Image (cartoon, rainbow, N blue to C red; front, side):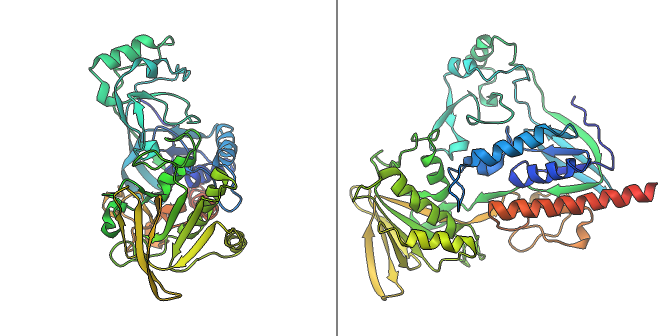
Length: 429
């Protein structure tokens, strides 16, 4: 069984996305001991699945590499992947945490050579690519995953594939006898940084995501643009693998809607504006390539406003002020976007090659699933409440935030958590 050396001077950080890693590193760089718990097999969270950041249009790999270097430079951080906090008891300055660790079936000897993956035949929907492609039963979650180790899908245990994977490994890295582990340790404060998940587009019946192959979500479009993604970086219609050049971006898909998410998810306007630039990147001066952004209103501030203005100057991009009413499909699988343009008050039925829904952002953890009592608002985000004691939310566990604001939130949470353990140390001394 794994052991974690921790005391009531230790900080527990739950979630190793950009917010969790930032909080862990900020705390460790002040000399604090940190236990960083992540349920996925790798660190980095949802930003690893993005193609580019806005507004600079830089690749996430740069920021990830810097954060991972800072993380590895801190001996005071214990990292647990494929792990979940299942119970928390105690109070501010004196918590006890129970963590359940799922088996990876691959030990630290792994060199990520890929021999096990080549030997396995079984394939499954690739969750990293939102099910748009397949992965093997022995797999590396993505090309830059940290830890850089393969994972054996438990579904192949007891099959010939599992035996083939073990036999193919030259480094004795595959351990099919690994068992689930449960560990307990102390912590003085807890930072909850479990991130966000995209709103389920299947629930937006009028937009036909559940029926029309060429209606996809904004997060799926990000994976499509990645050179290591399901289409090798090409904008291809899922329905027929044909190039999509006439693309619709629909704002507020599941946000600002009393039937879905009542709040503004904040990132969607900039996400669609960013993704509209992918058209020029993919097709250059091709006159057939164009995009249409259907919006209620564009919410951009500060430096984001400059980005918005640059997109407006692109002659390939058209803006239609409208809450799209519905989407249908013609006999060729082309989505037809229907609604009323509220600037000219005329009805439209516009045919596109592909529709991209800017889906809303919601907390990853349902309010009923928290292992400890915390104050959660009506939308499921953790509120800043004195009743939470030494438990602080960071990043998108606290609100719908972009990457920059998630980092700021994480730094603030780390400072508050440090104050808790410092006060506790002063009392004990």
